[in-house]
Image 1 (tube, helix red, strand yellow):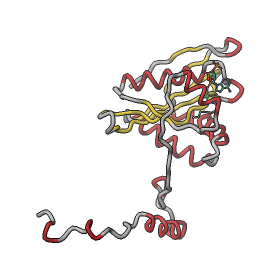
Image 2 (tube, protein in one colour; image 1 turned 30 degrees about the horizontal axis):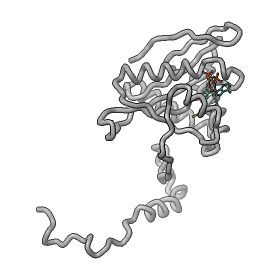
Image 3 (cartoon, helix red, strand yellow; image 1 turned 45 degrees about the vertical axis):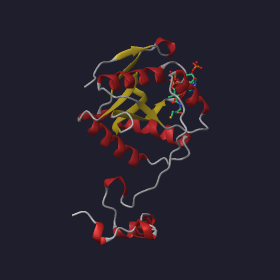
Image 4 (cartoon, helix red, strand yellow; image 1 turned 180 degrees about the horizontal axis):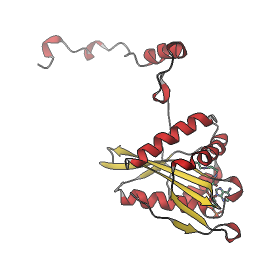
Length: 206
Ligand SMILES: CC(C)(COP(=O)(O)OP(=O)(O)OC[C@H]1O[C@@H](n2cnc3c(N)ncnc32)[C@H](O)[C@@H]1OP(=O)(O)O)[C@@H](O)C(=O)NCCC(=O)NCCS
């Protein structure tokens, strides 16, 4: 696993170390995610959920399927970024989803974000990933400028989503899911097939 630390320039010549996250970083990481999700209005700020997600990611990182990188300054976590491995059938190879890119608000614009992305890119290359991709809020002009500087290209794709009833791998109490479950099941019920799409029993494989 990629495991090097990388000193980088920081304001007032205080050095910043970019390194893989540890479980002890969790409180600082949750704080950073709260800053991020308060900007990204598609998401809610829910610290307990973010902590649960980070634990899952750190577990995936231990198995080599993800990488969580942090920027540490004066013993404090001041920036983070994550990448998770997925399979791309387009590329015929593994690719990486980048998420959770954020730098503490008073330290932005000093190169920390670029160092975090350089570390993700190094990890991706080392792990043979064919492509890196991410989503960003189309109204976040500063983030768009940041990714543009790093040679990320915009695409014609848009993000669509739906929530599953039992979320976050937790067995939700039946009462919590009742309405949602029905709606979810209904939404995936096949529409009536056109006559010619029905397969006659005669032609079924077997
Ligand atoms: C986007 C972000 C991670 C970049 O980190 P950073 O440490 O500020 O970035 P760097 O200093 O390495 O790079 C600076 C470049 O990023 C852009 N930028 C983004 N936010 C900026 C900010 N608040 N201040 C200055 N530059 C910013 C500019 O294009 C800048 O380039 P320039 O110096 O040529 O003007 C950071 O600004 C941030 O946390 N923003 C809020 C959270 C967010 O939007 N995350 C992205 C979610 S997809």
